[in-house]
Amino acid sequence: MTLTEELRAALSPGAVLTGPDIPEGARSDASGVGRSLPLLLLRPSSTAEVSAALRICARHGQTVVPQGGMTGLAGGACPAATDVALSLERLDVIAEIDAEASCITLGAGCILQTAQEAAAAAGFQFPVDLGARGSATIGGMIATNAGGVRVIRHGMMRDNLLGLEVVLADGTILSHLAKVRKDNTGYALGQLIAGSEGTLGVITRATLLLHPMPLARETALCALDRFADVLALLALARSELPGLSAFEAMWQGYFALNQQAENLRLFPAPPPFTVILETETSGGPGKSAVLEDLLATAMDRAVITDALIAQSDRDARSFWAVREGHHLDRLLPGLLNLDVSLATGEMGAFADAVATRIAADFPTARVHFFGHVGDGNLHLALHLPQPDARAAHAVEAIAYDTLRAFAGSVSAEHGIGTLKRDWLQHSRSAAEIATMRQLKAALDPRHILNPGKVLPDAD
Image (cartoon, rainbow, N blue to C red):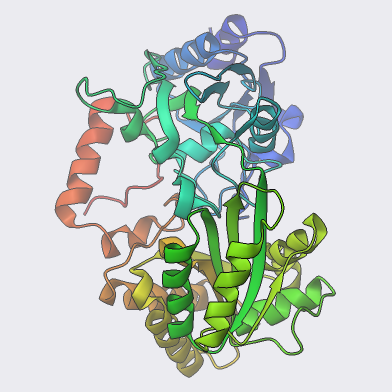
């Protein structure tokens, strides 16, 4: 039997798509760098079917690219024309919400917003939140160790992972869907798989922590003159707001561009820095008093120059709409999205150094900074009016070479994929990369899982 025939015999009807039946969405993740439709698109409906598919592909030496919600920005889910793509979209079940253990068990194909809504209906908060909540899937978020806007309070996906079910390259199923926070029984295999971007195994189910649902969230938008003031406000918020759940900063250019795109005028003029503060509260009368007191203190100390407190959910959504920048791709065609992390206190100096170097070498380029300052994650939106591969590489080199001098990470939450593979050595030593290769060889000796992703080519 051929590969296709074996797969069709082993999987449920409609699970093997070929030729014109393969949708265009299988070509590329949100990075837009994918150019080829896969040889086949598999849509298994159970862990057993994922196991059968990988076992058959392994026997044929067939490479497999796992795909989730396709919201990634590093090219990690993009197939070559010779690859089989394996979509987890049909593994979308919410298996259980355990109120006593404060956890949820769900399939890898479950969409984040669906998980959030199910948790809320049970009186809980799903801890990780992203702008792509309507399409990002749980398996992909674990595979890339996604973070989002509330890491400062609730951590990243790995921090909330209790148990995991994963299928290895040869079809072996490792199922350890634990509900306990303390589990010192040898190597933490789930933690190894988290962040591995489908290169070590295919995630099929997971058990994740749930958090108490806050009775209310209070949101403020603050104007500041200097990055030193941003750091001072962060220190004050950490000290005075026990429920601090988000601290997002926008440099002037980014704020101005997105405020205009949203047809808003939140301050008389775009300030040099803008911060969104969010705190989870117990609600009730006077619920804004703590936040108001903090802002009053910050104003008295000349840390902030102006502030707005959201008076409604609509107000809060308008603040977040500016931060999430949904119009960036339209406003800045060919945009390069870089996602880095470094010590919080170094972020201002890093941004200044990158902006200065890019302005000197590419005078027509535009660079906008924004990000999760509370956890040291900075995003760079880079636009070249006449982009080409050589110029894009040179701009990336400026950013990553500068970052290496600050001992930062080339990827905070988007993963490595293909787009950052050749920059991995800026953040990881040769010995670390060699150890990663040993792990890959141990779990996937034939290198069939997500080939060409994460690890740079060996010298």
